Length: 135
Image (cartoon, rainbow, N blue to C red; front, side, top):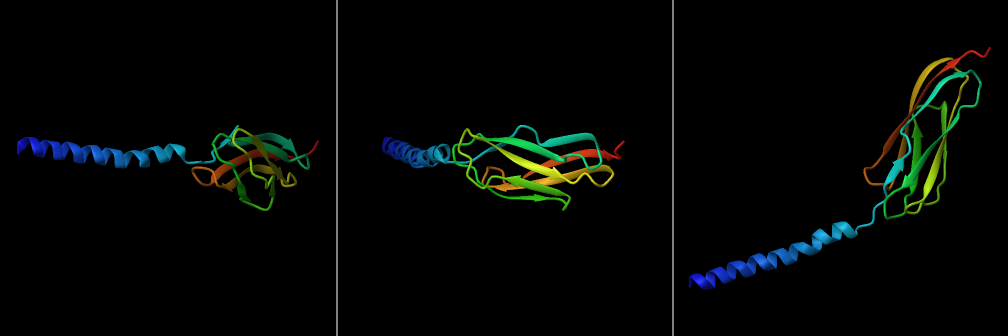
């Protein structure tokens, strides 16, 4: 009787492990996009008023699924984003161009929110600097 009970318990444990194994393996087979930025903060430094305010964030899709950026939102109308709407394939790189209006004098810090299908949801980037009067 004791031996039969031990066999039944061993059999139940073995079947339980086999049933759990495919779920564990599936998480490694899932396809996800991962967006990795070269830098998440661009410091303009001190720039002259009305100078070129265009800077570029470079990123790579380090995941194993195509990366699709669906929206880029800035914290004010003084910052205009430009990006490709085409999917970025695994291992490929892309660029997010930001144009800040350098007419207004003084220090600034702005955020850029990138919405995509990448793991982790939205990515928040920052730009900062100081605009001084032209000489």
